[in-house]
Image (cartoon, rainbow, N blue to C red; front, side, top):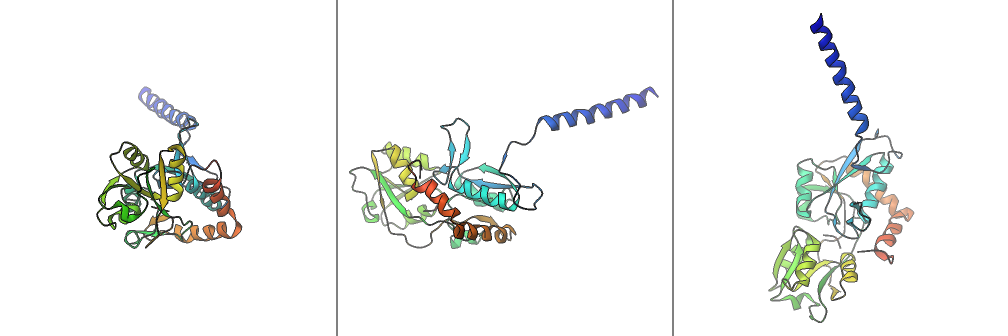
Length: 270
């Protein structure tokens, strides 16, 4: 009897402890609300590479380390309309598609272009934004055209369409790096001669580095930003109508103005 009482006491104590711990430790990794749909408050995981302002970047100024930007606002809007919570995971750009393939993310937003090669491994939404590639270099370097990069070392983000564009430039020595801020640091240190990045992203870095300049180059081949999903994901058909609604209602233009055209904006796809 004493043994039975002891076991019952132990069981009730364990249940009480679990209840207390659960109540005191709610999830803090989700953003957004679940007011717009019927998904029962389920959470979708979005993977991104938060080194690409104004698409996605870490807000270090506020000390919160919160990821924000153009893509983040779009993702929050869509998941809110569908009734999902949103969790955002920050990883290197070249790891985003593998994350989808390994089912570690439900979708990816990172200013990503839906290229034919990528479409072999993941599905894409409609294109939601178009931009243009630029050459970023030190002022006075006269590196303003693809032809001027012949014999020069050119920094690009690993796995981006800019890497492919740089490899098409005759005589260019292409140096892939994981993050955009690494590229800017290498450029300022003189370890690369120029970089190729999107115009909206280049603007942000030029504004805080007045010794640099950027010059647009003609867009050739595939372009535009789209949302990536695992192959066969049902979310493609759920996200596309909301993206279309955002375009027709003016919501997308509102976010474009907020992140790309306002004086506070830090910011082609990659």
